[in-house]
Structure formats: C-alpha cells, structure tokens
Amino acid sequence: MSNLWVLNLGFAVLLVGVGLYCLLTMRNTVKLLIGIEVIAKGVTLALVAGGAARGNLMVAQSLAITVIVVDVAVIATALALVININRHTKSLDVRKLTRLKG
Amino acid sequence: MHLFLLIGLVAFSAVAILCRELLKSAISLAVASIFLALLLFEMGAVYAGVFELSVVAGLITVLFITAIALTRGDGDVAEGRAQRWVFPLFFLALAVVDVLVMRRLLGRIPAIQGSESGGFSQVLWNQRTFDLVGQVGVISAGVLAVLALFRREGGHGKGEGHE
Image (cartoon, rainbow over all chains, first blue to last red; front, side, top):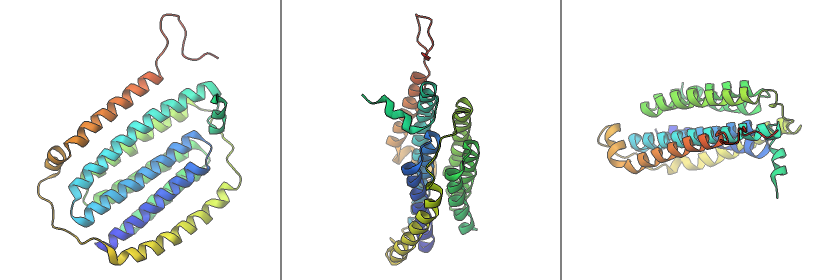
C-alpha cells in the first residue's frame, strides 16, 4: 500500500507540474483555467491517495469534495470574467489585459 | 490497471494543455476527469469519484464548452513557438526529479493506521461540519459573482457592452 501511495504522489506531482507549466507559458485565458483544473486534479489525487494509505479515506473524501466544490466556484467565476473580458477586448489573449493598466 | 489509469490521467491532461483547439482541450480534460474518477473508485473513494465524474467531468466541461462557444472565433491566440518544444524537455526533467524524490520517500512513508470508525455521512456531518458551511459560502459567492458579472444595467436602456 505504501508503494502505491508513493506512485500516486509521484503522478500527482507530475499533474501539478504540468498545470504550473501551462500557467507559466500559455497566453490563452481559457487554457490558463484548464491549467488550474489540472492542478486541482493533482491535489484531489494526492488527498485521496494519502487518505487511503493512512486509513482515513472518509476524511480524505470529504476534503476532496471540498476541493471540487471550491474548484467549480472558481472556474465558473473565472469563465464569466473571461467572457466579459472577451466582449471588451475581442480576444482571449492574456497580454491584451495589459491595456487595463493605469 | 492502476498504473494504466495514472498514465492515462497525466497523458490526457497534457493533451488538454497542448492541444491547439479549445474544444478538443475541454474534451481531453473531461476524459482526464473520467480517468481520475476511475482511480478514485479503485481506491475505494466512491463519493469523491461520483463527485469527480458528475461535477468535474460533467458540469465543468459544460461550462468550458459554453464559454468556448460564446467566445467563438476569438480563441486563436498565438502561443510562443518554443512552448511545444520546451514541454517535453520540461516534462522529462520533472519526471526524473520526481522519480528521484519519490525513491527517497519510499522508506519514509507514514505507517498505516487503523481504519476509521463511522461511515462517510457521519464523518462529513459530524467531523467536517465547518467544511460544509464553507462550501455553502463558496457556492453562494460563486453564484453571486456570476450574477454580478452578467448583470445588465437598468434604467437607461443600455446593455453592459459599450462597443
């Protein structure tokens, strides 16, 4: 079971790394939200794997559900922001948002 | 089987990030969510798996596709040229570091404790009550934020766009 925990944790780190790469390099605002979603998947996997390894699966599940709910609220609000920004800038390019400065 | 699901999860997540078309990215993300839900089911986390499958693979994918449809034609953003070439190198370096760190962690895993008492609902309602209150607050804040973002100006007969 402990080896399985290490395997799950390793893949969760990979997911978080892939999501961070997306956040650091992409310019499309929808892609940035997809990166956040990938990071949330890594966090969910790590939480449940940790709970399963230590015998606290029910607590881990409740925390994972909390993460999912927060994630949905964040994505819904961020997508609404993206649609509103798109109406003004006619683009999904995050670099266009520099025009909002000052 | 477990390793296959983990590889599928990471692979479809990477495809979701690297794919040029946003619609394909959203669908790849949904497939990755299905892989994660299957993993959760396999680990015995049935409730988290159901949430992942219904909320993330279902609701969030619908939200993404709706947003992509509402911004149709504006989704072609020129990404950096080096980005596609850098990703395999970055992923390889991350995987090597990951394997080295996890190999060191193998002997330091916390001991498995006894199984917890009570079912999921008992744990959720009795031990994590504050989480539930927080979840209700977060959902309410999200709904209010979306309503505020899509509100229309009243009284002057103007929409929110001023093009």
